Amino acid sequence: MPATRDKMALVQDRYPRNALMRNGHHAELRLMTSDDRDAILQFAQTLPEDDLLFLRWDITQPHIVDEWIREQETGRILTVLAFADGQLLGEGDLYHNETNWTRHLGEIRLLLSPAARGSGLGRILADEIYELAGVLDLKMLTAQMTLDQHAAQAIFRRLGFQREAVLFDYVVAKDGEPRDLLIATRRL
Image (cartoon, rainbow, N blue to C red; front, top):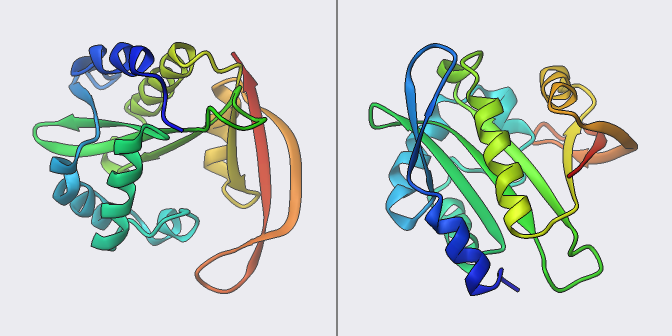
């Protein structure tokens, strides 16, 4: 079930907004809409194969991006996009479900183009997701990554996440090989 109208109004009132990255450039942050379809597909083409290997959805496929947009429109996923000079540089997602026994939890996902890495944009997007989680009265965020995603683990550690569990051979990547899944949490 989507977030209540009052909460969604508070979320939508935050955007668009500008953020200053460490490299001195500004990024425009805004919620994803159906108008962003082509920008997302172009963004996916800039990502290294290793980044695409572990995504839940293959965002290089137009029909998958269409489904992501539909989920965004329901309010069960909130996606903040970061643009600079008209180009999509990164995105942060907050997945949540108000109606089940995990309604106090949200899952954070971050994805940056190679050009944006090291600019502080990951931290900016994470902070946006924390703010949205607060608006939705969530108590904890989870993050999932494979054990061989060392850079992602380092980023989430710096963001205050702690390792909670490792599920062995839990995911199978596109290459058909099983990988161990790390689940990390951060209390809000």
